[in-house]
Length: 143
Image (cartoon, rainbow, N blue to C red):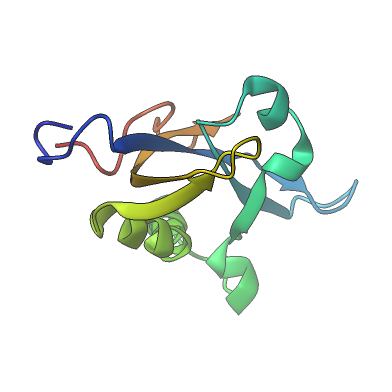
């Protein structure tokens, strides 16, 4: 936080965890969608284990299937895959690069308000079957 000139007493780093894993559409189909799910690392593990703590950012689908063109090379498919990921993650990237976001926390017991600068960072992308080796890497927001 020193690099960002922020007071550690007034600021909280909030890692964003993304999860990406393919799921089959039908039992006999080779067609799959990959839901991109998001949660915040500041939540306790017991909360993060609850499916309600995860929000769907969007779905990654093969562009060739959408357009009906299955003649793309593996390189073109990978390029399309990354393009869709980039589109889905644009709002998250904007949040991370925009700087601190002020949040107000209220102590339920006393009613006292605490203002904190929340600094968002993308902690990791987890994939069960990675297509390009990007597993558990800090991708956005590192200085």
